[in-house]
Length: 424
Image (cartoon, rainbow, N blue to C red; front, top):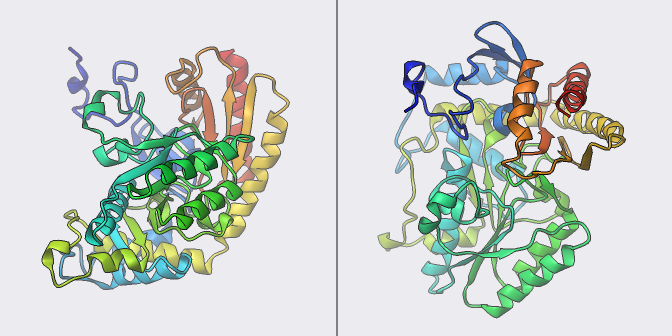
């Protein structure tokens, strides 16, 4: 039996407590930095799980939260609304391409994807179709609830729960040079069951937890075209790819496509508070619109559209509109490109790749994959040297706040280089 409760009763996510019995106690954050209880500074190289865009404790977001706290903290969202939610909804409609007409609030990336799946299946059900099959891509990750695990890669993340997961059809990842195979299989699977396929869900341009796997905007555009041609709903999971991460505000912009359903979270509040939205085409809303109450979209959580979270999200939207955030994104992306060019000369790494502000590479090891032994060693080394990076097995990636300085990026890549020296 472990003695962890003697230290803390907390069970931490994605943490093997037998290997990491001591948690790093963070006392405060500021900009691109986190400070431990002991006063040590860490550069946040992964935006605290990909959520922090403008920096920790940004004064504009702080002020928005404080002002809203003094007016309205929480209200049931069934039958009621409030100004911050209305502002966020209209702001999201303005920011996203025409065709994403309705906004449904939830609390996290996983729940936004659950909502998307239920919207898609509800749409077909309410128009009298029996379509219920979901198509997915290998290596996908869409969340940790039962529904989102079902549309994710079967493997170490969800093996104990396979008996609970619903069946999906899986397509190969469109690796460079093999894109046509993915496209051909997508069309073939739809044609093989034209009255059964309800939706295809993708992480546009880059798969996150699946290993920072990247594919082209042209491939994304063609997958969307095939779905449109066969009237299959196209779901874009932009939980991670949104808010500038891929070099544009949203990843689908690079392919010039409008998904039928899109999921946004993480950076929607600049990483300040939990919030998510699922946006959909008018026809999906209309399929649920009826005087027949049985067609109601039956989904909610107690904190749907929490006013404080919405007030922060509304301020975040204003920041994207009145600050040069995309200039910061472009500067960071350019700096990554320069560092990756230098790192490419190191024969201990391979598969260097970049999508906007996300940079990744693989360390050459004999036990590649998420459970590679090098991951915990790297994690400890990075932390001991003042940076927060959390490798996906032998894949090292950087996804920093946009306020990161050139000196701090230099320190990140310098530490990675020293890690390769010391751990090899």
